[in-house]
Image 1 (cartoon, rainbow, N blue to C red):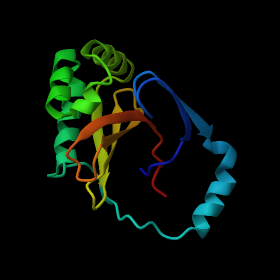
Image 2: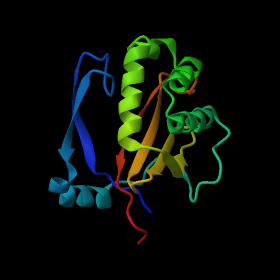
Image 3: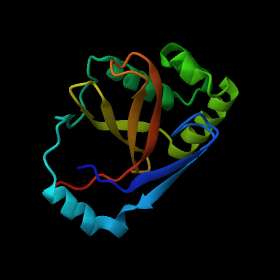
Image 4: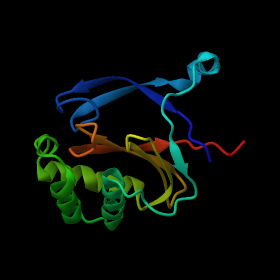
Length: 173
């Protein structure tokens, strides 16, 4: 399927140390109320300057640092083991990222996320020339999720963290 935008982050507040962090609240604009404007804008917009390589169906991870991190993250997430999750954090995440939450807070967040979402299977991923990676996954309930990795630097060496949220893939046209 194709990816579709279901919501757009419009504001972020809290004491979690920045956007998309523990302890913050994120607010979304309802995309359905602006579909006509979005479609008109997209029709008149210039082409993207970023060429994304999309793999479908998923066969293997790219041989890049984001690919290595995503592969181990999905495996760790699916294990359901909080100790493995913390070992993943200690192995890959930058110290600046680790300071934002205690191991106990990370374990609690991880437990809630795995309980709510369950086991994930990779459907496909998209990668741009700079190595940024977006991953489309689905769970046993048939829900789709997007995994986005965040880095402190453009060379993808200082891993900040990830975002895992509901995605709405479209059926092929």
